[in-house]
Image 1 (cartoon, chains in turn brown, red):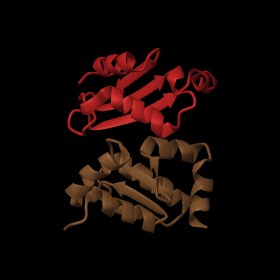
Image 2: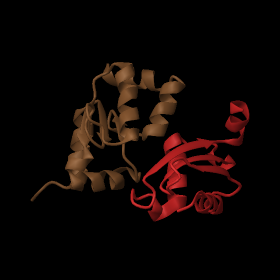
Image 3: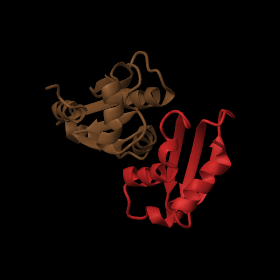
Length: 106
Length: 82
């Protein structure tokens, strides 16, 4: 039997320290909010994994149920849902994101 | 959906909330929303946003509302931000 969307998501966020579910790719984001989120992590200069939900309808739908969060992008650090674009930008601006990211990468 | 409808829905769902909504493209599907509510005290940013999403229900499906930029503050945070 095929793996469920939730199983696939769990596997992805458990095997990568930082995962961004987004529309498009870091080089070609298909949405301003996804682009802004990528920009934050590029500014921090840390490695991250991305999943393009536009190429995977099952994940696009599944990720919203997984986190009880209706919008994309979604950021996961160390397997934990951190938030969407607004939260990540706010945490970047107030200095909370950097230590969280550094801690995750150690 | 209009900015006024969004404002009403959030105010009805989160008691005592002060809600400002801006339709930043003028097309009724891209909004900037600022919510100030004492109900946010002690809640994480994720929990606060989930409260607003819950207030808007099925509208935040990407079809009715394409984009929603959210700011969620407690009255204390709002006072120090001004």
